[in-house]
Amino acid sequence: MIIELEENAPTEAKNNLHIRLQHMGFTVQSAGHTRLALVKGVDSFVRPADFQHLPHVSKVHSLKIRYKLASRACRNEDTIIDIKGVKIGGAELFVCGGPCSIESEQQLEACAVTIKTAGAQALRGGAFKPRTSPYEFQGMGEQGLKLLQQCGERHGLITISEVMDPSQVELVAHYIDILQVGSRNMQNFHLLKELGKMGKPVLLKRGFSATYQDLLMAAEYILSEGNPHVMLCERGIRTFETHTRNTLDLNAVPVLKELSHLPVIIDPSHGTGLRSLVTPMARAAVAAGAHGIIIETHPEPDRSISDAQQTLSFDAFRQLMHEVSVLHHAMRQEI
Ligand code: PEP
Ligand code: MN
Image (tube, rainbow, N blue to C red):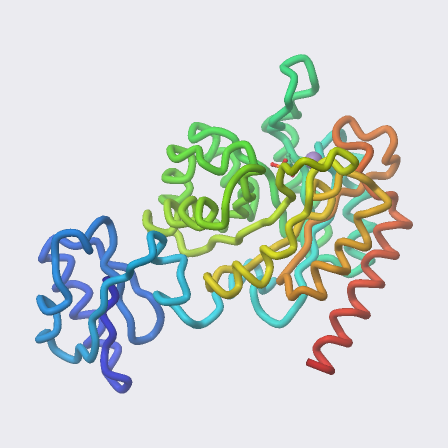
């Protein structure tokens, strides 16, 4: 249920109504300057008419779609997430680079220098790795998080790292700026709820067999717990094609931007699984209107402990940055 206030309603009126509705027992979320959303199953037991008479209310409507807070119907303006001055979801192109797994201080340091000088804003690296085999490297854990935090601070880069389990949320949030939910965990609802209770931004990766609606419902779990800082990430889906690791679904960019106000990030590294395809698909993502891209890079890509085949060399990363910057600049001039 969305309650719209009169265009010129004072902020105080909105705040008062918010409190009043909470006292009536509803879970209320702000949804833009003049909108309040009542969430958590409300549509099934109350009617719009019940709220029409409240002060400064102009319109009340129930939402037929299942995702509410993630929808454009609930909030029309794009969500822009500001992390230490880096704005994600607006006119600037957001680029995150770094290794699949954090392996050592030297490896991270070399990545940080390269991506910072190339103009990227964020450093990624997994410390808790979701590996298909239990016999493969599982990540450096807390030690890796510490290295990522220190490296980010040294170079003025914000940081992204994956959290796999509700019990890790506090730890990862202590060190890292953006908590990544991996594809395999997109519907780990306990994890999503825990992330919703924490204030830090979340990069939510689409499950490789998830529909857009599944992804938006997963985002809804985080939003409905009170955390509005969610980014949606397309990272390739499973199809019948076996040449590439996954099929990067670039339809996701315009579709998600149409359905939702949340920033849309593309991961062409996991989306293709092949080094030679990463830069072309990064360009395509930017051309399609993605707010950002996330790219795996390593000082010695072939020696990367995980995802070596899709990992770019530093030269290739610099070239990618050059190409996407030119393209993004041209698009801002022309469109
Ligand atoms: C990763 O970013 O290294 C990763 C494991 O991503 P995904 O969950 O998309 O496979
Ligand atoms: Mn990876």
